[in-house]
Image 1: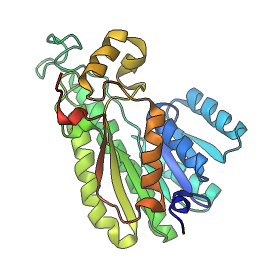
Image 2: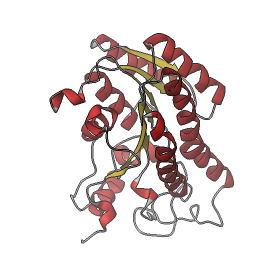
Image 3: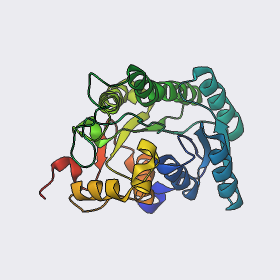
Length: 274
């Protein structure tokens, strides 16, 4: 097998959560472009239907699963339907997540009155942990069940964040411990599942132009400029820049890698020199 052939996903299937937009959609596109059959899962039914229709018209083998990753019975049913449709379960992108709470600083560097630990809405904490950490666990649990049943190993890729290892005052408090938990869970499960030839890795993005945080980076030039200034490479990334790393981790090109937490953040975690 040549080096390029190791990236070929023909004959495999992938299940991507949070796939109606942003990084999840980029992951799904990368899998389909490499030959995989893909289930796109998301709670935004309208956006999901639109993207699945587009990819189908482009000639890719895709299907939709409208669900919330905090709904365990819905996830079970969706994974079973994926296996029935595609004959197995090879790749999971546990990507769905988000954060709606403000950081303790705003982008201008002033205290945010709604983002302090003593003013933070406890429901915002519960919601962020439920989506970013527990929802990731739910997705992995169902994927592992299907992968073990198939008996041919698999690759699980979780979307973590550079916020798992770097304190970001603009980011809401609950998001950071949730993503740190994802990092630790990935490392633990890599050990647990190695015996079954199931690899578990994490991608840790820095700032990308997505809908997270209410889509600030798309809508507010002030926020975009602030984040651009924090990145040593001088710019926030577009979601297509994630595709090569996603394909690497999903494919045989990374068949000796498990338990990794790979930063893709333009050097932001290294600190600013500006």
